[in-house]
Amino acid sequence: MLKIGFVVNGKKGRQKRLQQEFKKLIHTSQHLDIVVKETSAIGDATVIAMNLADSGCTHIIAVGGDGTLNETVNGVKKSTKPHCHVGMLTYGTANDFARTIRAPKSLKKLLQLIEKGSSKKLDLGLIEQKVGDLTYTRYFINIADLGIGAEVVKRVNGSSKVFGSDITFFGAIVRTFFSYTNQPVLCEADNWKWEGKINSLVIANGRYFGSGLCIAPEADPCDGKFSIMISGDIGLSDYLKNVAKIRKGKVLDHPKVEYKVARKLRITSPSLDCFIEADGEFIGGVPVMVSVVDRGINFIC
Image (cartoon, rainbow, N blue to C red; front, side):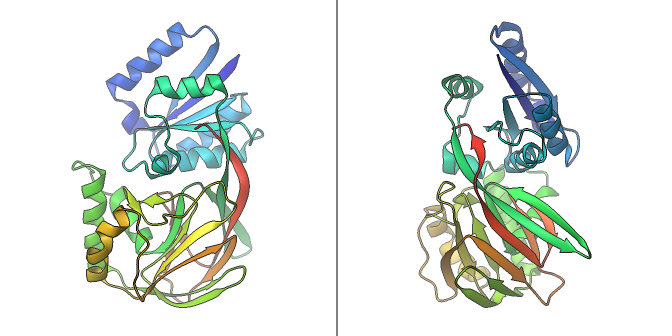
């Protein structure tokens, strides 16, 4: 018997239609053992996913956005069953990773994939931060980025989102440009080095972030490498002139934008105001090591 655990973002999971679907599934499934757990605070999804995996769930589904998926992946990887299958139902603000992998848009389609055994081994990213004598680790499945993106995430996560994800992110990006100062960084990769001021340094496993911005059109979560996009000392006018091209997944031809690939990065900065986010979750400051975890997760898609 398949045992499926659902990690539901508590705020989003209170939607009546979703609750009704779960109740029907629990009462009608003859060959599925269904467990539904809701989060109530930041970090809950990590603990819930870890406990579900440890309790024998064969499949664990994040029901929410990219942040819920990020926490769920981290919980599974911290469990005693790090190779159980992970999937997602999109009930979040942006759902950007779903755009890359074409995740199922309904519970019915998700269950069909599970019953067919349809899954892929996808790469993960691993962030390592050293604070004093301690090293903190965090996995990401979609995108990590340094610079303005971390400040945008803080703004978005503190907003109401009543106007929808696209407007919420666009407004947050524009407002953040007025208060953000481009940060100096040194980025050392496998076979290249970059130094200068960044507006954003994107480390991409998936292609989209910021609610539909195709920032890394050549990224592939199955190829064992990151797609890197470095936007240097640019300003708001540069962003506004190119945002339509980014949404369409076009590679930008701009003197202060560079595209690279890497498997491992070490990023440092003399500034105390250079921060990193991952999958829409604020992580903290530099220095950081970021590396690919080959085929790190069994993902339902």
